[in-house]
Length: 491
Ligand code: ADP
Ligand code: MG
Image (cartoon, rainbow, N blue to C red; front, side, top):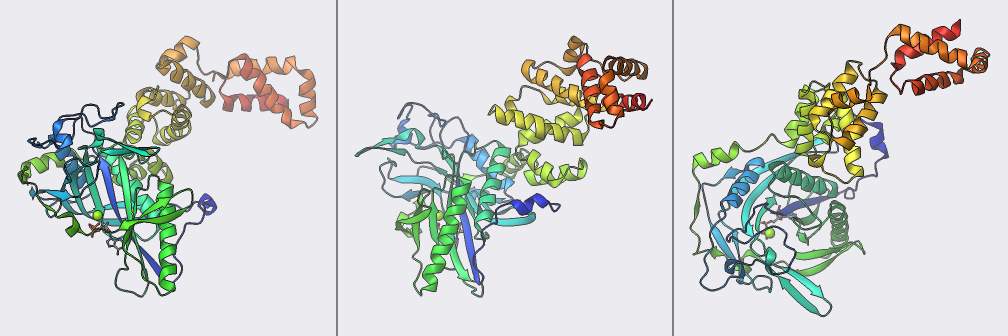
């Protein structure tokens, strides 16, 4: 990325004190956008009524048997492939045993020793540098139910029980709070590019646990880690990790030991608090689920999933810089969402110039969508129409100013630019003789102002332009008009 002066205005990012190093690894849970649950046919999307549509399998009633959701399997493999993982041709579902009222079976079906995906990595850009974080594994598991605490009573809603999740586990390759947040943003982008998760941190369809430890820079061994649970915004991820790093350094400086435990972040106090001591894998008594056969995947099936993986956001951002000569900032902004990038390319395919397309997309389309809280998928203007309009500007059939007016009308009516231009009788006036006539008229009409101008009040020039534009509804070609007016005023 090119150096940008504005960057200096950004708040300084937190780094651990000199002599200390932070080590961070992430566990990210993502709800998959399937219609039904992981092992049962009840709907897995948001349902208004509590405990509506709950299949006996979701409740773990005796005598029920799980059947794997094909779509969830495909999505999980696609996540693994997009994260450059190896897809194990044989993986195993295991029971993770623990008691909790939102887990009616007394165990969660997950994958333990043989997950579906292993040994991948993700690349992203962090403060103008490329960063690579290794992915340890991606496995499939089912979600638990959800608690509603009301006064002194706790109610449980099983609508979420059995919803398919992928758990993405990173290696501890992250070294700052900002890097951790960017990693989560990047994983979210990967999931959204694949269209397998809506990525909503706030509503919990994407959940992130952060494992944090600190060590002296001279140490060769990792320190003891704590796990920060359920951080539901990028800001909280950064704040909680920053707090935790400082807390651990203080403990070690005082000669004490960091306890391995699970902690919760309280955003109102900006502090983390212990929740429970960290459970070991052996506490869960994992064993292969006898109700489910090992999952065996063919090379052909894996190849089929691979063909469904779109170009990654990073490849796209790089390509946009090279192919369309966009700045790094523009290309990252445009590739933030796949639908945004597609919109941009459709404008270019409609023969609008890339630079102009990028400008209008960022300054007009995204700003307009932002104002109306709309997604680009619901943009009232289709990219082909906007591209067409930009082409008219480039051919000087429309001035930029008129273009803005046509844009507003396109947004309002969804009409094609040609239709609007025709209806309004818009045509750019670039005929020198017409423009000269217009200039003559205006100067004749305002002799006092002409005299002022000639006496040195050059600012009044804009007044003449404004009067002419008013009379022709902005259709005069501004460049030519300026030239002709200046020429006339000299005489
Ligand atoms: P568990 O299954 O008990 O949660 P794992 O070994 O699977 O433990 O690791 C879970 C997460 O913790 C991974 O994301 C990993 O990168 C991270 N992690 C492991 N050791 C450390 C450490 N010393 N400091 C920070 N993160 C760590
Ligand atoms: Mg874990």
